[in-house]
Image (cartoon, rainbow, N blue to C red; front, side, top):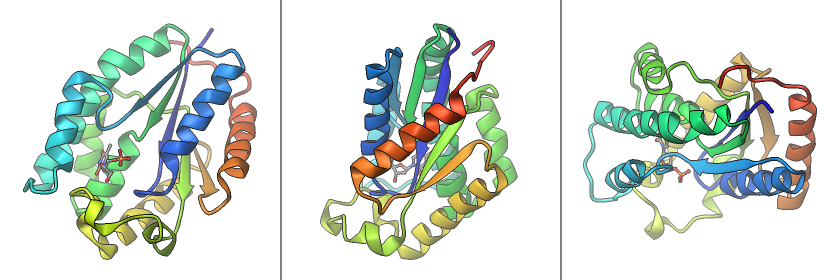
Length: 211
Ligand code: TMP
């Protein structure tokens, strides 16, 4: 059976992790073999990189930040995602390269062409079959978080997250066939049902010939 690669994206506290987990559970219940994973931190190396990147006291240059996310991604693609796809599994990843494009490209202001070029190296050209974008406005996410608990990226401020959200909108508009945008303000169960039915519809008959 062909593998499928599904990624979840959205700004911090959009609810994407909950929805990614729900989808993985539903696909398992439907008999698919599923690998649920995340970035940063989906591998042993990645967990160390995650610590370096999110530690609030770290000072990280934007280019260094982008390259560290890319290093995590290369390890993740080559040791977790591709092998699972080659075994015909469904891989559900909480974040992938769109996060780098919007957080380091749109958010930090790094050159988008350069960011894209680094993604090619990190992924070896692997692209998701489907990306679920959980879209939520800043006011809603702010009601969901406690500022003192924020990690280094979450503490980046409103203007940063505004650029990140716009970056996601831009990707969705540019690639509507890959990116499914859903309203993250919907109740959790309603959203989970909507995502599952869209995933089933979009992926019916989808074939990934060579991982
Ligand atoms: P998480 O909270 O969804 O696990 O993501 C951790 C943080 O890392 C979140 O603030 C988004 C950020 N991030 C980037 O800035 N660039 C990336 O490439 C990835 C994968 C995450």
